[in-house]
Length: 434
Image (cartoon, rainbow, N blue to C red):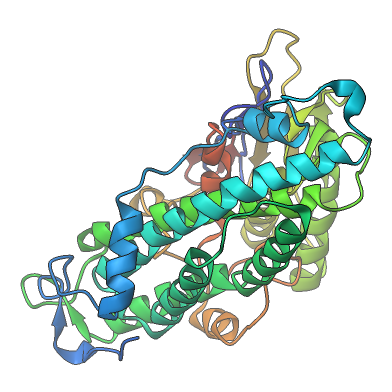
């Protein structure tokens, strides 16, 4: 795994983390983190790939469709990690006043009003793009859980397009309250979309959805769904970063933090915490867990969002631990899982490697590991998660394997700021993730 302060490749400025994992399922995962910063369900029994295309008429109410189309024409504004930090420190404010006239609290009010004004314009544009995508996506758009997500996005969008301009601190505070409510309302979208993928898999498995030849649809025929989910989750990460940063800026300041961005993020500390969480989950499932050995640049720090790095590492580590236990058997003398934090002083990236001896990934499956529509979890576990109603994306309450979105979501987190996650598998031995 690598991170770039401007790309999610764990690359902060000139330092980027890279995560390699080996052994668990014999793959190499490479993570680069950088710093760039209401419609009824259709009859599935008669649905085919060709009949569920983006050419279908819009399922949006006419009045909503008109407003969405207006906002879709507007360009989205990218925001790098560096831009978020500079904005949070007030470096991008156009200061037309004398510094001696500014009180200690004035800068905070000006910063919050500037950020709020940007979000008032930007978030509706991003929501509009996702509503259009949700409306047009083949197959996935007809799943009940995805329809529920579309309704949430429409509700939030219509609420924000009516937001008046923000001209004073009182209006900014009212806007913050509204945005906080929307932020919380969207907290369960990740699991809702995972449920939608589960519903689609079940419909395909039961023969309710047919391929272009009228036979059961194959994995390779769902490219449109795969691309849609990549866009959707990447956009969701972006919106939650923007809104989460704004909400964090309104909280009492924390040492070394600018909003939710830590200027002194320690890969070693986050790896250590992720190891503890992953071992807890493994112990809960199997009653035992392999040893994890951490080596390399334990003194390294860089600017990043700690929660993002923790999520990525937790996903890779829990996969490594699970694969190791399942391959060698409970009560065995497990080989350790190794985590290496790049120790070269001239590294352009922050690189983290996770290596396991968990048996590797079969060649017939390796091309599917990045898909949101593929999982090796037992169907009973999937059904249990479908019934789950909480926010599990950053929680140890989730099982070691479930609805199949952990690995692709991790890569999206890495890629959002310019990094990546890569997996190299040696079938029969183990996996390296970096």
